[in-house]
Length: 543
RNA sequence: GGGCCGGUAGCUCAGGGGUAGAGCACGUGACUUUUAAUCAUGUGGUCGCGGGUUCGAUUCCCGCCCGGCUCACCA
Image (cartoon, rainbow, N blue to C red; front, side):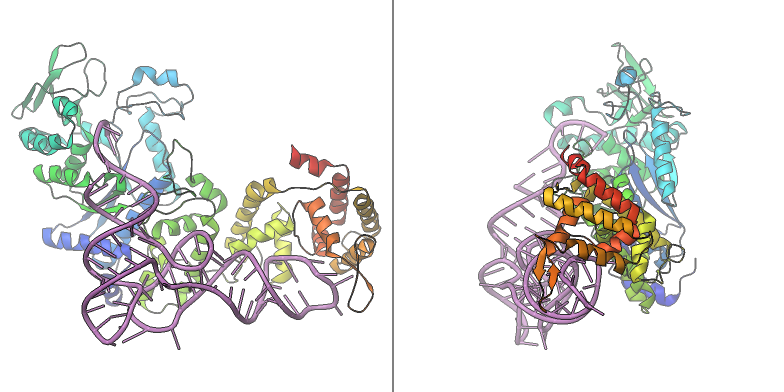
């Protein structure tokens, strides 16, 4: 990729956070003289990928693209799965928990897959889920399996060094542990040759020359094991530092929960001869009440939920914005994210200045190549309103409403808008519709509605909204709905329309009724009235 | 207790050394009957508190108050 000097200059100055981070990396590689740059993200494969996984990879990619604006060095993103970790507990998502019971504490890559399918293990299954997940978003990354790396010996050299520096590592770790844990702590976790479990046992001997450790196996007998070739792994804190040293990682971001430990990881990385990577600490997400989102509580939003009601770009925008703030992540933030994304996208072509463009989130969301915006300024907020008012789950009806006001729009010319129409309908189905409260009509009201149905029946299907509206007024011009107008003639009170909305649509407000009937269909409307008169609408809401 | 983040309109938030901003909500008006996915227009703020720097601070610095999260057991 070639970057124009002007663009590069702007990148070196930009205050957008990905550039701030990228500059730290630039400084680092300028100092070390390294000829390539490695970005890493971590993944714990005991669960499925979630919205935080997306955020971490998306944000890391943003830093990577920013870096590429200021340097020609090649970059890579490694998504590292810690799949050799022992299965400490059985995830709730597993159908038959007893099936996994015998495999507790074994590395995830030897635990059989409870979901069946063509996977070698539970870990392999979850890794595949991660890859599929990342691929659907089109991320550019390399996948790495801890098990494979350990087994292939890619960590061997550093593992032996860890034996040599055993005392130094212990000196870093022990002060951070409670008294009880100090007594048994070991940075090395052997995989038991007997049971295949990852053991948390004290070491009886450490032999750097042989590359071995000695410990009591599960049957109580002392075993001496070569640390290399995947026979042992490291405890998570030393594991971070070891990995960074072995792979020469330049950048890794992580959530705030790691923040206090980061200096520890760094120390160990340096003890093992590496240079600690640049870090970026991001905030965790909160739910609508300001509580931390956790999978076990099930609060907040899942990534599937977001993508049910809005597009990936809006989610990427949400991730771009202020990673250091604890942001609330719940349904109400979606429409705003969608509309802001559209605004930023529309602004981009008008921004002549590179400086302004680099500050625009869409630059980061699309790695410097945002697509052309669509014309028209229909907001998502408006569409949500429209779905409510039009009371429809039919895209065609939504489009009919839209085109009444904006005939230049169509699904063919505005595919993004068409997608949003679909999202708005989903939103309507899941949030608006269940909240509808239909009222029963009293006797007089029922008679009026019945008359309305008859009068509508006299009109041909496809009548003009104006003609239908006239009928609606004529039928409504009766007690108790009459009102006297300014010119003294008999008019129809608002209560008549309120009645229609409350009884037929389950809403306090609604569209111009004639327009609604024209689009919804006369036959459909009569059917709707009949249902209301039979009490079915109100009954459904009550049940 | 350590660390991180926040406190700006009724609500959700943006902004940032020089007349204080948006959306929603609310008020008013228009659209050949009062209906609103419409348009126009308006109300509304001691920018948490105290000090400092400055010609000028909501913005920068220091201190405090309040709120949230996170670490201290486990990965």
